[in-house]
Image 1 (cartoon, rainbow, N blue to C red):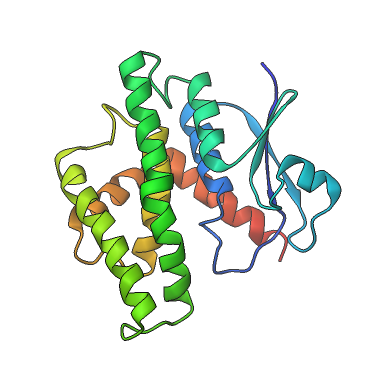
Image 2 (image 1 turned 120 degrees about the vertical axis):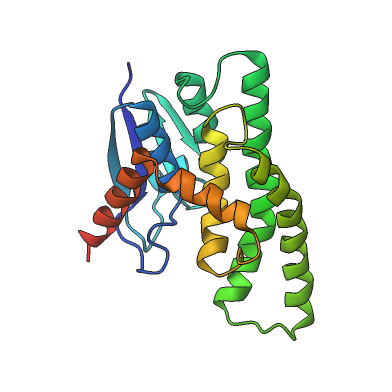
Length: 212
């Protein structure tokens, strides 16, 4: 089996720690019990090798033998094909998992990322642009809340879809956006109580702290 390497930044400022997207990959690898190593690149500056692996200068990327994959969602699906602990092999289970991965990254995260930037930047409720964006995020959450109220996990069992969705929702929760969404909060609590998440988070925090 080829060696798996997750590449992330060597260091990031304190605020984004615990949310840098190599956490999604670490979590999946821990769930699957796949051995891996972590490599790092500088936070400041992007050299040619970095851009060859990640053309937008971001992290993470995964090296699997002679395969290099960027974008956390693509990496999660790649790992899901390697391990049934992350994605069922039957057509129904696989398609259900894949659709929820895309829902997390497209239907949810495309709304929550700009929302989080507005919140972090201190926009007030009176700002028209903020109100439109906040209403959009609430619309998405209003659709997701009843689904999570009826299910333990998005697919028939825990999968990479739950890693993707939990990571999207954790940032919203940190910024106070889930106060009236108890099912979303309970879903996050279930997911983040998993030993694989606990280890992945601790490892990421230790990785960045070591470079301080």
